[in-house]
Image 1 (tube, helix red, strand yellow):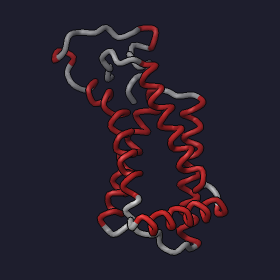
Image 2 (cartoon, rainbow, N blue to C red):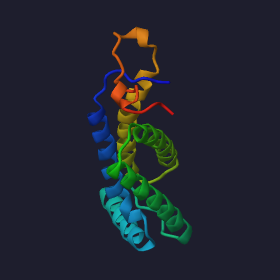
Image 3 (cartoon, rainbow, N blue to C red):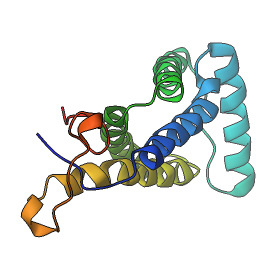
Image 4 (cartoon, one colour):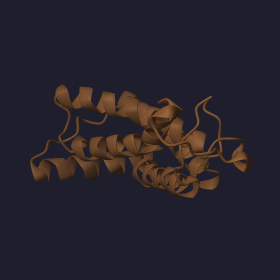
Length: 162
């Protein structure tokens, strides 16, 4: 069992909820073919006008994958907005690590440089959500002892590590 040392549970849950709102705002347009076409055109125009690179031409498979990603992320965001849990932050941090890796791969292979903005946000939210869990895995003897809060199930963030 991992115990986190004294982070403020409500502050952590605010970060989990804030990252969910970001996801909802950014990905809602990806959830349907009609809204994705609008988002695609807007991003392509922005990338082209700013010299960061346009999006590739829209095709049915790209639209399908964008819609699948958008749908899943919208539902995941709504869960974290309505009922945020410390474990949601942990899993979201892991998901952001994966998203960041695939964004870095796309950037390395010529994707529009507009992706750098999204990459920076993914990495930032990932670090903020994973850092308390990473710190908690270190031996408790390395820092002054801080008692776990029994009311929160023995875990200062209110959840046992998975």
